[in-house]
Every structure is written in C-alpha cells, then in structure tokens.
Length: 86
Image (tube, rainbow, N blue to C red; front, side, top):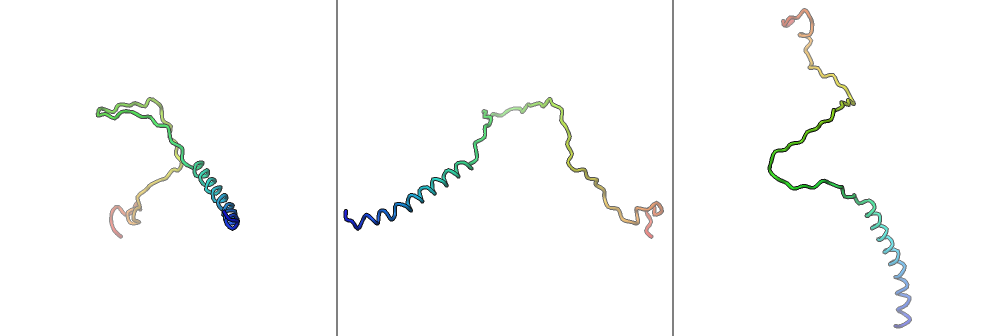
C-alpha cells in the first residue's frame, strides 16, 4: 500500500458510517411501527350445521335520532282539499 491510498480510505469511512447508522435507524423505526400479529382462534373447517346461541341481553345505544317523513304536496295537505285540485 502506498501513502496515496490511505487518505482515500479515510475520506470514505465517515460517510459509510453515517449511511450505516441512518440505515440502522430506519430499520429500527420500521420495526417499531410494524403492525403486531393478532391472536386468533384456529379450528378445522368442516361441513355441517352452524349452532351458536347468545344468552346475553342487548342494550340499544342511539347516537342520533332522526324523524323521517315523506314530502306531501300542498294541495293534499289541507283539510278542505279532499282530493280535489284547486
């Protein structure tokens, strides 16, 4: 090795270390925000009758209450019209 090759190696060492650190940090962030697997119930699939009963009482929770009505024309809405057109 000659003395001319040494500065070239030192010049590339710091950018390589910074790049490797950035890649390691990116991999760590990706691993932290990766979705966790869910625990599920596994069973064997077969053909048959599905039987399952729910024995609990339900509770109704309304968030918004709406009144729905059909629009009526003005000629039919009055007590005097009785189906006749004016």
